[in-house]
Image 1 (tube, rainbow, N blue to C red):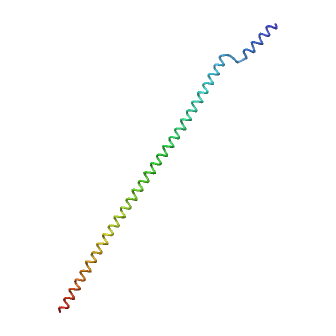
Image 2: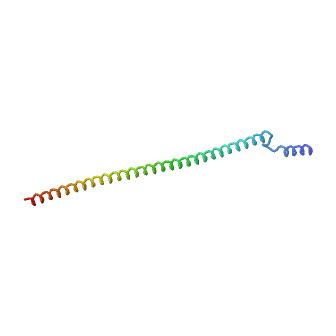
Image 3: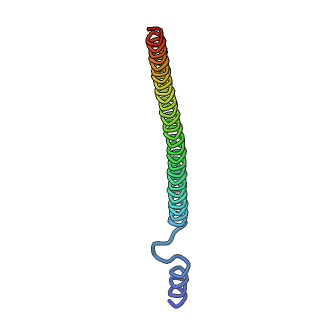
Length: 124
């Protein structure tokens, strides 16, 4: 009887309840599945971060290009305004010169007429 009890105790020690080679393999497989799932989640997060960084860089490049285009547009507007101002100033100068020339011609004509009148009066 003691031998049977000793055998039953060793059997209990060797194979505790709920422990079998199949459970051990299932547990390892689950651990591997969990590790793979975690690795996929980590890779997806890294991919998401990389995409966000790329989008941010792209937006910054677009903003820089837009600001350059805007600066070029403003510079072109300023050049056009300067050119228009130069043309307006040149037209005003031409008009002023023409008015002065006309005034000078009028004065010369008046002087000629006055001389002629004086000469006519002196002859009389």
